[in-house]
Image (cartoon, helix red, strand yellow):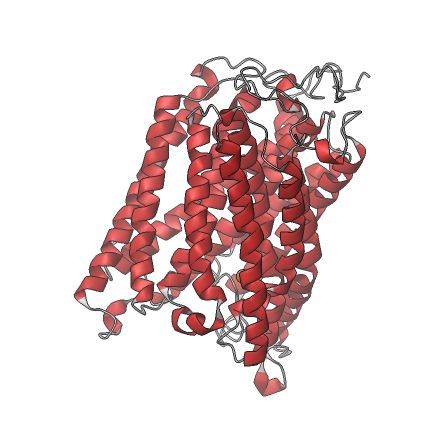
Length: 559
Ligand SMILES: [Cu+2]
C-alpha cells in the first residue's frame, strides 16, 4: 500500500511548526514538556532553599515571601502533573509511538492532532502568564481546595487563580482531542493481522490511560466552571456562608485526581515493559494478565477517591469502605511488579542506561506503593495526613512515573527519534546521579513526616515546636539532594543535544527489539514505512528477536 505523504518539498515552517506528522507533534509535546520541567525544577529549587535556609537570598530571586512560596509550590505541582507528566508520557510518547508500533502511517485525525498540540501550547503560555499578573501566580495548591482557591484575595480580582484555572481547562481540551485520536487510531489503523492481544503493551497502556482520563475529567471540568464562577462572581457553590459546600470540590477533584494517578502510571508501566523485555531478551511474562490487570486497576481507580478526605469530615463508615478499596487496588499493582520481575527471571539481561532506568522504576515505585498503604488506611492517615510523609510517598510514585520511566523511554527510543544513539557513559553518570540524589531528597522527608512535620509551612522558625535542630538538618539534607539531582541533569541535557549530531548512527533496530517501530528507518520519514508492515503469525517476518531465548512473535504469545 502506498501513501500520499511523499510529495512536495516542505518548508521548515510546515515541517516543524505546523506539521501534521504524528512524530513531529510527539516531539513538540516532548520539548514543551522538557521546557516546562525546567521551570518546575527551578520552582522547587527556590522553595527548597527557603525551607533549608529560611529568609536567605536565593540566586537572583531574592527573598521569597509567603505568597510567593505558595505560588511556587502550587505551580511546581501543577506543572509537573499537567505540563510534564501528562504531555510527555501520554501525548509525546503516545503520538510518537502509537502509529509506528501498530504499523500505520499516521494518526486517524492528523489535523485534530495538530490542533491538540496548539491548544496545549496556549495552555502552557496562559499558565506562564499567570505568574506575572497583579497579585502573582495562584497559591491555592495544585488541588485548589476552596475556600482558599475561591477567593485568594478579597481586594483584587484573583487573576493568578483565574488564569491558572483557564490554563488547566485548556490543557484538558488538548488531551481530550489527543485521546480521541489515540483510541480511534488503535481501533482502525492496526497493521493487517494485528489482533487485540498482539498490540504492544505500551500502546495499550497509553490508550487505556486516555480512556481513563476522558472518563474521569468530566466532573472536574464541571467543578472548575463552578470554581471560576465562585472566583469571578462570588456565586458560592463552595462557600458555606452562601449555602455551598467546600467538600463538594474535594469530591469532584479527587474523583478525577485518583484515576489521574493511573493515567500517568499506566503509560510508565508500558514503557518499562517494552524496555525490560528487550533488554532481558524475553517475552513479557503473562502479557494478558498485565493487560487485564491494567483494565481492572483503571476501573477500580474510580472507587478510591475519598481516601484523600479522611480528615475532611466524611462519615467514618465511608472511610472504612474507601480504606478497603484502596488496599484492594494495591493488589493488581503489586501483581504487575511481580510479573515484571518474572520477566527478568533467566533472561540475558543487558544493563543499558534505558534498562537501568526501567529497573530503578520498579524499585522506587515499589517504595512509593508500600508507603501508600499507611495513607490509604484511614486510621494511620489521621496521623500522617498533610505531613511530609504524604509528600515523600507521592514523590516516590510520581518521580518514577514522570522522571525515571521517561528517561528509560528517551534513552530507548532516542535512536528512533533522531537516528543516533545517546552516549552510554554519560547516560550512566546521569542515571546514578539522578537515582541516588532522588533518595537523598525524599528519605529525610519520610522521617520528617513520621515525626509529624506538616507540609505547606513556609518558615518553620515561626513554629518553635516544629523547628527542632534535628528536623532542620534533615531539611538541609533534602535540599542538598535536590541540588545534586538538578546538577545530575546537566550530563543528560548535554548528551541529548550533542548526540543529535554526534551520536553513533543507530540503524533501524539497534536494540534488536521485535516491535514494529524498529522496522521503520531511524528516523522514520513522514508516512513512517516505505511499505506498510503486516503482522501475521507464522514465519514471523518482523518478529525475530536476535539472541532471544524464546524467539516469538507477537510479544504476548503465551507458552
Ligand atoms: Cu488517591
